[in-house]
Length: 114
Image (tube, rainbow, N blue to C red; front, side, top):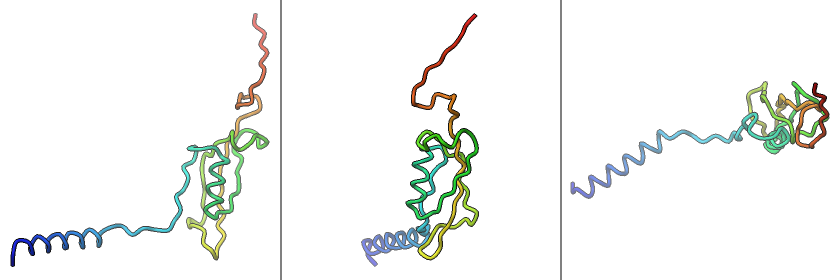
């Protein structure tokens, strides 16, 4: 057996081993990271992946736009992604600022100092 044939055999064997041991890709969607973006964007991402999203208001005021709020946790009780035949519900814990906080709309503060 020539050197070229042995080298080709070694390369093919290495490629076969690497393909056989490679992890299998799954079709599960990428889960958003809580707090990485606004609550509105996180909820939009989950709905785009096919989830039915329910909000748990954990702090702040629910009348504040979701673009000013943050997601603190995402709960999927069934631990499974949605499919064409199932409709999975996820629960998103949302924390919004209080109206007394400065959350981006400006505001006027009055202070009295002594």
